[in-house]
Amino acid sequence: MAASGASAADALSAATDAFAAAGVDTPRLDAEVLLSELAGIDRATLVTDRELALEPAAARAFSEAVRRRIRREPVAYILGNRGFRHIDLTVDRRVLIPRPETEMLVELALEVDPGTVLEIGTGSGAIALAVADELPGSRVTATEVSDGAIEVAVANAARLGLGDRVGFELGSLPDGPGEFDLILANLPYVPDSDGLPPEVGQWEPEGALFGGPDGTDVIAEVLTGFGRAGIEAPVIGLEIGQGQGEKVAEMVRQAGWPEAEIRLDLAGIDRVVIGRR
Ligand code: GLN
Image (cartoon, rainbow, N blue to C red; front, side, top):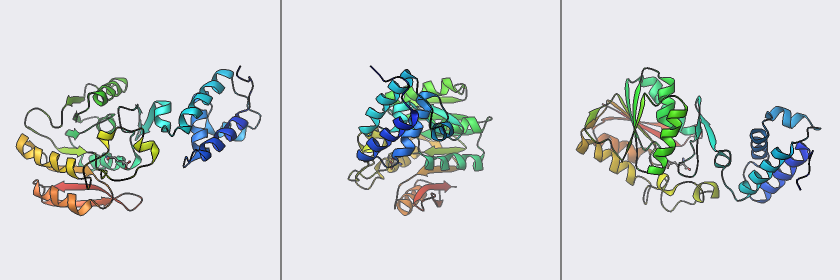
């Protein structure tokens, strides 16, 4: 039988120790975030109220979450959601968990202020839906090759009430030719041989991560596909990984955007290539 009235402080410290022993990077933070969400108690209260007792149901839900986190399942999959910009996205193992650095592509959209946007490889729908949310006059078309992922994206669009301005298409590129004001893409760009932390390598979808020997194969394929498909836009923004800036900038110029700019993320890593024509 679950102990009733277990203290939140004891549950947190036991979970923190167990996470640290399992090699989790941020054991205390993860314990607080999980307990806070599952018990419906804000983190400040959890941390400051030493006498706080947990309801048995919350204690049980937290024990189950702790068991999952020890196996290095990401917090976002355990909770089933992740915040991105001003929206909350439902996520599960069918989609990559949205990353803070990907917000740079949404910031680019705010700079460009497009009426029409094409997003390639939307996953959970994070970029497409954040853009539609922040630019209420915009229409977004988003593609995705994984049918599991597109189900997640469509459900997110409906739940956020953005389904009327964001359309999803199964496939790499949209069916017909088209002109957009902006193209955005966070394609798989991790080099095949890269070692990833267990949270990523063992839990997130491989197809959303790996991009060939140096990580740029999928980006190259998509860039050359635009010309063949007759898809045009004055501005394109691509998320990239460490050390890929110069190579992808050259690919972007070759694909018809002569001005290519490389932007770094907060860690100083090449993160976005922007092409303009
Ligand atoms: N940023 C992710 C990671 O390094 C990779 C995402 C991607 O390939 N688009 O874990």
